[in-house]
Amino acid sequence: MAGRKVENLIVRPGKRPGKRLSKSKVFGSKFMKGKKNTNLELNLTSMIDVFVLLVIFLIQQFSADGDLLFLTDKIKMPEAANFQQLERAPVIQVSADQISLEGAPVAEVADITRDEYWNIPALEEQLRDQKKRFEQLREMGASGEFKGDIHIQADKAVPFKVLKRVMFSASQAGYGNINFAVLAAGGGGGAAPTAAPAAAEEG
Amino acid sequence: MGGVNIDTGGGGGKKNVDMVIPLVPFIDMLAMMITFLMMTAVWTQIGRMQVASQGQGDPSTQPPTATLQLNLTLTERGYMLNAGATSIEILKKDEAYDTAKLLEELKKIKKDNPDHRTITVAAEDAIEYQWVVQVVDTCITADIPDVTVTAALG
Image 1 (cartoon, chains in turn blue, purple):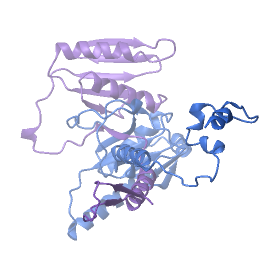
Image 2 (cartoon, helix red, strand yellow):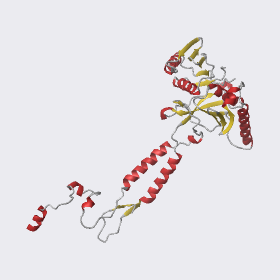
Image 3 (spheres, rainbow over the protein chains, first blue to last red):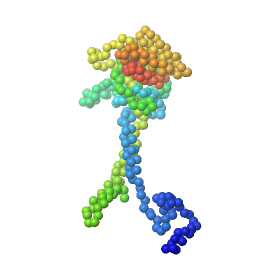
């Protein structure tokens, strides 16, 4: 008994952990004598908590509207605080150098600015074809009514001259409900839907 | 491994009522959900602003014609707001459109004509599209929601 007390008093040279460190799960084992504990505990509860939070956050972010319009590097859309939810409608994309309908190039902006016409014949023709196809599908029994909705997804630096021609062509082809596609300003939500505006005055 | 053992303290010949909740399939499902949601996530919110309508419907159900003719024109100099016989020019401030002043003027008009809902916006050829959108946005903010962007101005 006395010998054991003396042994406790003898300070052996070498690394000695502090009281707190010797009890640590991570570092304590370094100073353990005898067999090393090889059991590894995974903190599953906290991991599941993180997973659940991530899933909730991502479900909140989930939106099917993004499929209706595709963002491209060539088109930097303007921002707005007041907007309505997107609906399925043909999309005219206007970049700094090209005009496309549903992703297919229709005309070059350089050619349009050179012309003195009010409309863009190629765009108008394709829109008329699209309207005709829609009507044919309706005759074959497809549901839905032609509302004349169209979205214009234009680059914010495009001159209004080009936009006017696009709008005029759409209007001539029977697509009178013209909508500008915009990005939410500051990530804010859309405003309450507004009533239909006054009749178009194109031309 | 991968389970939670809920020890109910049974012992001494009693029936074992220990229950193990299998966490592995649960974690698998969460991981799959996270992957799917990350792949389909839409980080930018896109909306639409209706700027022209073809005026469908029964004429009898159409709203009464507004007494006030409200027009707004974007020029290289600034905004030109025509409210009936009154014309207000809001010049650019430091090479930028004075949207705050425009909003103020539109709110004044709205205050004097609470039922008025329509405005026609026109722009010069060289004006960039973003300024037109900004004007439409300002009009809606000023509680004039029926904005028509016209291509009439040459």
